[in-house]
Length: 101
Image (cartoon, rainbow, N blue to C red; front, side, top):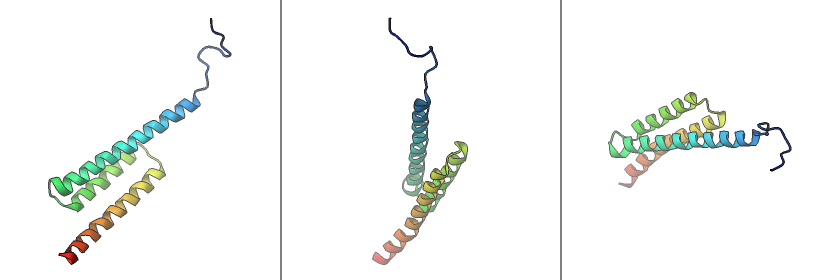
């Protein structure tokens, strides 16, 4: 029979809890980004409603996910950075294509 140092069921599991919490947060972030990207690309290119309709869907999905899962300020900073970059891309790319052709 194996020897145990502690009583049964009293193992310290804080490291496992932290790891699982990190895994869940990573899954939420990754899943949200996948859904946002699919919505953006579908609306902008597949359906043809335009970049700004896809951008609005991207922003709305990010806001809903952030509030639904009560995500941290790091999530909000990353979302705002993506919103700004995609918005700038939506302004710069059409300007460059009109200059080029």
